[in-house]
Amino acid sequence: MSALTRRGFARMAGTTAVCVSATAGDAAAQPTTDIAQRFPQDFLWGTATASYQIEGAVTEDGRGLSIWDTFSRTPGKVRNNDTGDVATGHYHRFKDDVRLMAALGVKAYRFSIAWPRVFPQGTGAAHPKGLDFYNRLIDELLAHGIAPWATLYHWDLPQALQDRGGWESRDTARAFADYAGHVAARIGDRVKHLFTHNEISAFIELGYGQGIHAPGLKLPPKRLNQARHHAVLGHGLAVQAIRAAAQPGTRVGPAENINVCVPVIETEEHIRAAERATRELNAGYLTVMLEGRYTEAFLAWTGADAPSFTAEDLAAIASPVDFVGINIYAPHNYVRAAPDTPSGFALVPITATFPHMQTPWLKVGPEALYWGPRHVAKLWNVKDIYITENGCAGTDTPAADGIVYDTDRVMFLRNYLTQLQRATAAGVPVRGYFLWSLLDNFEWADGYASRFGLHYVDYVTQKRTPKLSAGLYREIIARNALA
Image (cartoon, one colour):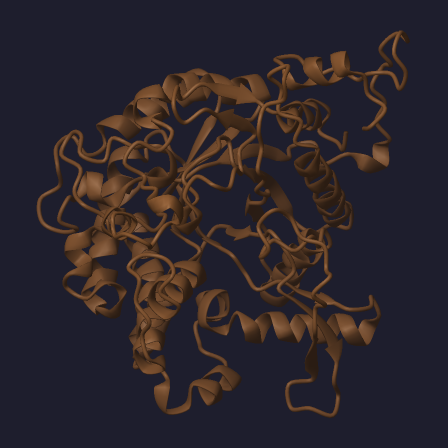
């Protein structure tokens, strides 16, 4: 990429992606794609966002208070004391943003519905205007040939429910199911794919365990494990409610940021160890959702702090799903075989010099996008897998010519998608990919300091500008192959 001319960069970042010759003055080369680099013919390319991170308009049209409104307005909880009050103004600029999607060529858009817009108090009577915005968004997407994929919970729990215990309360799981059924009945004529939760492990561990996300709690182990159980129960009850309320043909599944375990060396013994590690290290989340039971090792690990549950709970949690979404950014662990231990695996330490992106937690390990879906397919016989989030943050700023040269993101995407293509070529049933994210946005506790978008957002003017990576993604989609 370093040999591309400035003019070539500018054209690639604009509305038309082109292949540019290596030296200035040469005619533009014709794009060539090795057949070995292609994705399956019907592979679904999309992008993703979340309601609190982009919508703004937090007091408009009867929306209720969420835990992220409360948390972000508490001094010191979010970097620079940023809030999502305005965010990227998507609530009023959604038509412009749909046009950005159409220019990329995506065929699907994963967005989330704000629970407090629909039920301002979490339960009770639904707000009449609650779904109006989403109905307008859905219609606009369909008018541009983009399929809407809706997430029902992306962390903005109504504050009224948190005041009554949040996910520590079994009542929240039931309330979530009621909300899910209500939404499915009213948008199911146009939205055929619904996600229940986004990243249970993140909003439980970070929000209820470590206290660095909303609602900012640091629960003792017993209470934390119970909150986790209620969240996965909420997923199962929501699946049942959606089945009962939605039109035939509606498909439903979770979107979970699984603990990706990569074999430290690709030999049979280490691969089997990584599979075992994947099952056990996701035991409280995806494993129980797909198996309907907590593993013996998980229950032994939690001991006296294990959650209270019933057989009926586990049956609900294991309600059959139509697909599994997995959010993958980095390997969580490298694993080696340890035949002399009860588990049969051991974690290999990741050195401090391991490469990472602008956010230190985002360690660069493209192979996670191969091993993550491969393990899910092998362990649980999942036939339809979607990568529901993948991307990276940067400190993107426009250059003097106005272009955002996010070469770090270009590098990241090219390397990760190479591993995803390896997975599809090997027969791993990955059906689609949703890049995170369409726009720079409110990045939770990092506020606006981290930029994940394909489009640069000037938070003063709200102007959107395609970055270099937008040109790369557009070309990948057009070719349905690596670019």
